[in-house]
Every structure is written in C-alpha cells, then in structure tokens.
Image 1 (cartoon, rainbow, N blue to C red):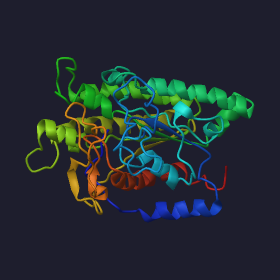
Image 2 (image 1 turned 90 degrees about the horizontal axis):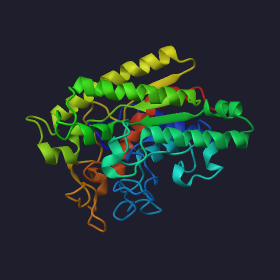
Image 3 (image 1 turned 30 degrees about the horizontal axis):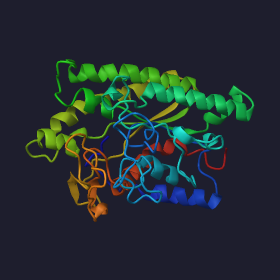
Length: 352
C-alpha cells in the first residue's frame, strides 16, 4: 500500500513505442494478464465483502470515468496502466464480477488489505489474502478448461500469459512497522523477512504448478516514505522518509531477489522477473508535493473521508490518501515497472 519517492523517467520511450506497435497490430502483446496483489491493484473485489478496506465512495474515483469502483485512488491504478501499456483495450476485470469471456484475457484478484500471511488481513475484516487469491485463480482455471476443452489446453493458454504479483506491503504495515519489534512480532527484521519469503516461495510455486510461466514479482516500495509512516514516526534526520522503516523492508527485497533466482534455477521453463515501480533517480515530473495526502483523510484508518475534500491540483501530488499513490504517480510507476517486465513479452509479439 505504498509508493516510493524515488522515481525516474529514464528508458520510458521504449514502453510508448511498444504500446504503439501493439495498437497498430490491433492485439495486446500477450493473450491474457492475471493480477494478484493488495490495494495498489484492487479494482473492486472488496466492495461487497465485510471489510473496512473498501473505497466505493467519493472522492475515490473522482477522476475515473466510471467514478468510485473500489480503486484506492482518484483514477487508474498501476495494474490498469500496465494493461494499457500491454495493449489491452479494456481494463482487466475483477474476480468478483469477471464474466466467462473475461477470464480468457485475464482476471484481477487484488484485494485491499491482504498479504502473504493469512492473518494479515484480519485487521481489516474479510479481505482476500494471497492463498485465497490463488484458490480463486484455480476456480478460473477450471472454468477456462471447460471453455477450451481440457485442462492441458487451458494451461497451454496460461503459459503465454503475464502474471503480476505484488504482496507484502500489508504484512509489514499491519504486523511489523507499527512497533518494529512488538510483543506480538518479536522477530528481527531478517527473521520476519525470512518468514514472509518462506511462505511466498510456497505460494509462487503453487502459481507455477497452476500453469504460470511468465511472472513479474514486485519488490516492496519504500514504506517509510508514505504519509502514514511519516505521521506516526516523523522523518529521519536528513531525509524526507522514515529510514528505519525503509531499511526493514529492504531485507525483504534482498531475500526476494534470492527467491526469484532460486525459482528460475529450479522450475522448468519458469521466467520470474524481479520488478520495481521505482528508481533511484530523483525526478518526479510535475509532482511537487511528495509528503501530504491529496484528500482529507480519516484519523482512524488513513483513508479518504467519505464525501470529503480533495485537492484540485491532483497531478502535483504523490499521494492520494495516507497510503496510496495518485493516478499521476501511478503513471510514472507503471512505466518503470513495465520496463522491468519487458523480458516477459519481448518475444511474444505476433506469436500467440
């Protein structure tokens, strides 16, 4: 549920050229796109669930054509923009209301408040953690097998698809970063990272066993830079972020790189790609406010107050609420992530 302050615009020409190619060809670069994650990608799966982690009210969606849809910002989220860059002419449907025809082009399983650990989302109520998202995907695979005639044909189709997985933000924000070494989570940063990675390894292998071959696995952003962390702990000396929080999260990212290498080395035909939506460059385009939320936020949960005020110059803000980026920030992060994902579709154009 975060976005790093560290962004750049380097190497962004390639995504635009690739998108232009796809538009000319009239087909997306891959036949389908499956999305797993938290509130950074949720596009409506939480709306009808008993959870506080849902945002089907204004000012959320104020800049989205359909209005409030369950997306946790003012407009498109990062998954929407990556789908556009891949050449899809419609956003990937949420699992909650995906139709039979939708599933052949992909499904968005994202759920605000979820995590790698099953217990992570319990703080927010009935959210869909990663294990349940994987179970939902297996339901979709069964439906797809019926449509295409067999499970083997379905898995052949799935092997050509791109999968996006972004988990772990809430595991830290709900379980670890509030007090670092709390009574309920006494592990050291390395021990907690290892706990998460051990579970994540099982889950990503399950995804592979279900037919995934091209998987973009997102690193965690700098959680110490989000407004919630800054309000709770204050910025570190000489920094605009809570660097102790950033250092804790970096342990996870270091372990994630090792996990991805291990998966690629030991799983036949696997192509897992370590993906980031940030860079070390300090370029933000027109974004000038890197700290404050754009909307009026609740002191209870950091979400926008229902019907509350929102800033008028939304393109100048990094953060929409206390946790989530604005659409303007998502545009930057999606292009950076897309460049990291490019090995997954570089050889796919006009093949499938």
